[in-house]
Image (cartoon, rainbow, N blue to C red; front, top):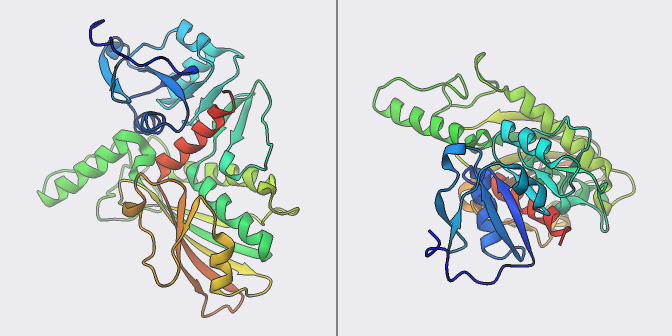
Length: 345
């Protein structure tokens, strides 16, 4: 094993710890750091004790998977929590009041030091309390907060309504695997697993999960509302008065990856399609104008930021318009987590 680890480049300025390195979020964070989003090394930590000591690869070099143990939690200047809720709560106990704890699992939402973060939509110079547990906002809330305040700053918004189509990957690897198994089962006339959704998701749309699902779709919808209300209240540094809170409806879509959102926005005065597209133009937003195809979840997989397209005026309301917004949920959460961590460099 020591021979395999020989030949590594010199360590970077810091070494961060990643709990849940084998999860979907964990692999996304590993990719972001491997391609140089921040100049740090990464210590991989498995929440499964049986996987501790295994050899894997990180950034093109051999890496040792470590266990969830106190020295690892105490010594790292930044710890990214991307595993199960149980591993997050265990890590919080081990970290005590050590700064630099970043939770992507939302398991720390009720922690007394929990502080919702989304650097992509925070005002310049924004800082959280020094002892905060940095809770990365729900990716759908981040995506909406990247759009509404920017529109509201240019063209005051009266009200808005948003349909959010959730991917199976928001339920982690078990959700992705269940959708895959359901699809295969339907095509081969076999029984379908329903452990995660307790309903048929394959070739279907769900307004709610079955009664025996471990989490409810309503709980996810309420989390998006809470996180979005917090992000909008901070104003994103774009407008003195925050954008009004939209009406939200979360729908479980039969897709593996990526959020798609249909936004209806009513303004005080109709700015027109060109003006809306211009207002949304930003380095983190890919605005697909009318001469381009609207964005898709497949096309945004692995891409930074969000994409906006299919902007059209509402034929039945001269003050309103429609927008189609797409984002890679894992990427968007991971980018914001890395941005929080970079504040500790």
